[in-house]
Image 1 (cartoon, one colour):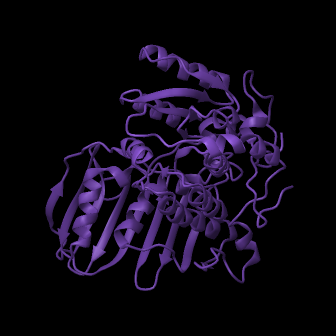
Image 2 (tube, rainbow, N blue to C red):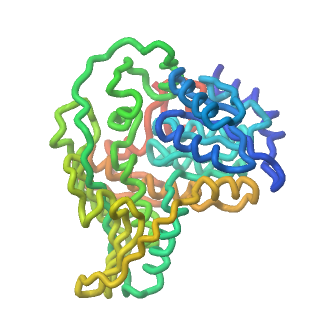
Length: 425
């Protein structure tokens, strides 16, 4: 089935699709059932007035693990499928949760919006800059709620930290630093091989260019291959980048400069293990630093944010597994530490917005703007030079090689986003 045929077949469903009323049980479809998908499933099973209608994954073993979770929680059985179109075609489904590899985030979100479904999509919002804009356009065109899985937007202690920064108590805010300093593992080298039994590899690839199956590009390791992932900048880093951008009150950077390289891992990872990139705005700056080859973190946390003002500094992170923030005065003395460690209510916020039609805490626009920073850091790393960004066109002018990386090449596939700016192989 081509994309045009699929959209024609679902047009009637999309027109008839309804938003959940305050009295409805929200029926959801789970798309992608790896570690993050199963965590979302477990969360949803704790909430009232939610029913899991579908489980979808191209890996039969992932489907079986998810079904086992339903049985363990004495939850009603859900339909299972390897093809997300079955979910989009069903008018009973109100919303979908997308926890696929990054290369599926935009195609699945766009199709879900066009089929009348609200969307919770994991971070990073997109695989590349252009896809993020297409996701925004799809959400606005169809009137769908799209929440991005940047959970700090719904974490009370982070909300208090942002409020403190904006109160003026640390003076004029000039700069922020976001870091991801942790120990990842060396994945080694593995040859291409046969597709494992029970895996629909064609469905897993989706619109990404076809390459042979390789265990080091499958399951979690897809993060480190450019076809499917965005490295740790898009994986973990986008959380910290989002908090830093939020605290600064900025949207688009004008320049991205610095470096990103794979230095320490001798393995099949394509993405950098080391980054230091500065984003410049009209009157502010953000530094993004990544080292995924050491265990000792920075400022006492592995992933954190610091916001620098003329009268003090605020740090946001997780100390001893407890989320919170610290305030330092001009002398660098710690004067306050909020570590109440409340859990985020990000899924609850999404479901509330499915009912109310209000804008969610991590709307797709914010998801796009924060992911865009991770994408620009990756572009700096891939081309090996600084870049200038045009916010009006969301392009990198006067640098054709870098600008090509703001979008991707797709293979012919029913899920390929319809966009004249992106080509198919």
